[in-house]
Length: 65
Image 1 (cartoon, helix red, strand yellow):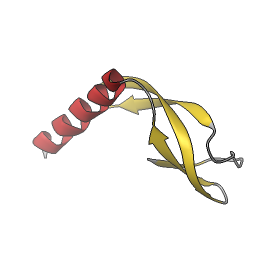
Image 2: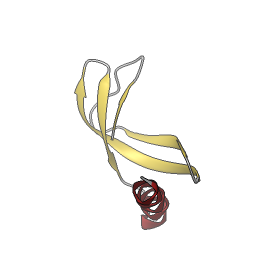
Image 3: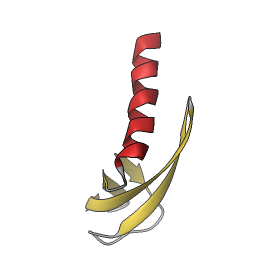
Image 4: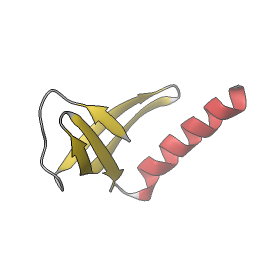
């Protein structure tokens, strides 16, 4: 996942992300893995359960199309 932020975070920093998804929200932890000025690339580092919430949401969206 990537995001444009109004500040530059250091590589390796662990952040908490609050995602609003069509089937509810998810709170996930992610590490900053790459950065290009204000665009940051994240790698999820949270427990499996948060990944399951996001996967279910994206699967449901794909099925509805």
